[in-house]
Structure formats: C-alpha cells, structure tokens
Amino acid sequence: MDKILDYRSDTVTQATPAMRQAMMQAEVGDDILGEDPTVKRLESVGAAMFGKQAGLFVISGTMANQVAVMALTQRGDEVLVGEESHIYNLEVGGLAALSGVQARTLRATEGRFDVRSVKAAIRPSGIQTAVTRLLCLENTYDLNRGIPLPPEYMEQMCELAHEAGLTVYLDGARVFNAAAVLGVDSRTLCAPVDAMQVCLSKGLAAPVGSLLLGSTEFITKARWIRQRLGGGMRQAGHMAAAGLVAMETMTERLVEDHENARMLAEGLAAIDERLVDLTIPMTNVVQIEFGPLGLCSEEVVSRLLNRGVKVKPIGPTACRMITHWGISKQDIEETLAIMQEMLTS
Image 1 (cartoon, one colour):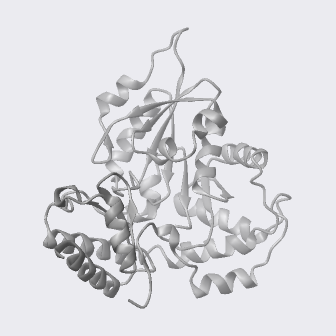
Image 2: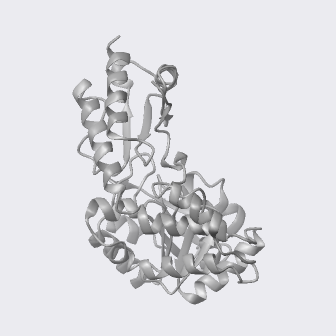
Image 3: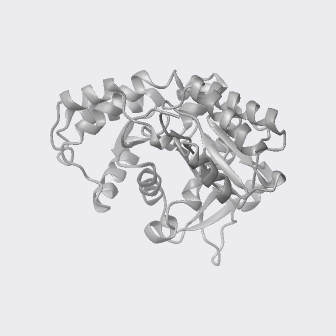
C-alpha cells in the first residue's frame, strides 16, 4: 500500500489547498482587541448559519464545551449529561475542575435519553439539593458510534428542559454530519438549543478550531471566560480563514463520508456479520466488535498497522473506524481486502 490509511478519527484530516491559500492571504488583526476582520467574519457567518445571535472562535471543541458550561452555570450546580458524552468522559474532569459543577449522567438508548429519566433527574428545589441548571445534548451522539439525532428529538428535549427552567447546551462537534445524513438544514436542527458549539477541524478538515454560538449576552460572557483560560488569540485570522472555507465548501461533501462508512460497514458484515451492527443509524463512524472472532483490539490494531491501516481501539475487543476527506472509495475497497485477508488467515 502506497499510503497509510488513517481511520482513527476525522481529526487527522489535512487542510485543503483552498484552505491553505486562504490562510496565507488572510487579512488579520489582534483578535483580543476585537480587530481581526477574518475572525469576526467567521463568527458572524457561523452565527447566521445556525440562527444564533453571536459567535466566538475558540481553539478546540473541548474549550468550547468548558467555556460554555462555565458561562451557563454557577458553582455547585448540577448538569445533566449523557453517559457516553464527550463532555463527561474526555475533557479531563473539566466540569468539576473548571466550573465546580457535578455531573448527573443519563443513559441513552441509540443516542436518545428517555423522557421519564430526564424528568426524574431534574432535582426538586430544596435546601439539601443542588440546582439542576443545564441539560447537555450531543449530536451526533457518542463519538464511537456517531448517532444522528433528528429535529423532533431535539425539540422534545429542549421543550422538556425549558419547561423545567433549564438551559440547553449542544455539543455539536459533528452536527453537520447529523444534518447531512438526516437531510435537514443545520439551522433547523439546532434551532431549539440555547447555546452550542460546532467543530471545524473534524469532517470539515480545517486545521484547528471550533465555533461557540448563542445569544449576544452568552457570547460576551464566554469571550471573557475564554480570555481567563488563556484562549485569547492575536492574529487568529490565519486559522479562521481555513474555518470559513471549511463551512463554505466542506459541509455538502460529508455525504461522501457517510456513503464510504456504510460501504465499509456492509463490507465488514459480509466478511462476518458479527463484526458490526448495521441497525445503528450511521454517519461516518463504524464501531467494530472483534470479540466473537476471538481477537482483542490490541492485536487487531497491531496487525492492521503492519498492513498500513490505522484504527482506534475503544475497548478490550472493540475498535472504531471513521471515514473522512482523506479516505476514498478506493481506500475502502483496499481496506476491506486487507481485513478479509487478516481475519481469514
């Protein structure tokens, strides 16, 4: 194989030639002073795209999530999060360390919270209980499955939360993937949430950054918190320029990633139907279970790496593969041939 096929994440994507050109030619200024015109344009375009009042360019999705929680809660509050959510599992305990809030986890079935469970998790007012302040949603849900959640579900959760006096925050790192596979407008999908983030450096292939979006009041506070965390930037327009190209040119092509993921999953099922669950709604994430074949994930990762394929272990016998701009249909065909040979040898 001439190149390494890296399926570990869509974060391994490389900037497109158009992004590189835009970065080189970007008009820039001091962003902390509010003088970078390219950053301001990115924030404005992003806010308009999702129907929010304002936006804030931050260095990562993790920073966006943590800044949002800090802005939307008080110390000692309780936030409701999914058991498999990124904000709960993969942000270094930021909820507790930075916001001083406690997380109450919700079980999700195929990415969805049960209405009764959410209602039961909202604490009644009392002198001995924390205030349930925030409901955190994630779309797509679970970075190891990438489950898209439809507008009806988003509306249902937001209505439930708002009736109880909660604010709703959406970790929309891959929300463009959700909108693409559901065939809905991203603005419509995210309309009921109070605040959200969208990642530019995953399937959209920008080299860095996420956008935090919400009301003008929320973004004003978030900008101040970003500065406290050391997230203020100077001539950030060079990075923002790539983000603009990403949103303008890369959202519609996500369908190709989904088609390639389906091709990969169906090809693996043809090798052995126990490897994948084809009933799970799919975007660009394929979860593979090697346990029924008597293989551990460490062994699979090593074998595939020797054949020029990188995958991510997510459990003792499970691995994850994500399709992205750097993976073509031909790459999928080559990968399936390698899998066939590895699993039957």
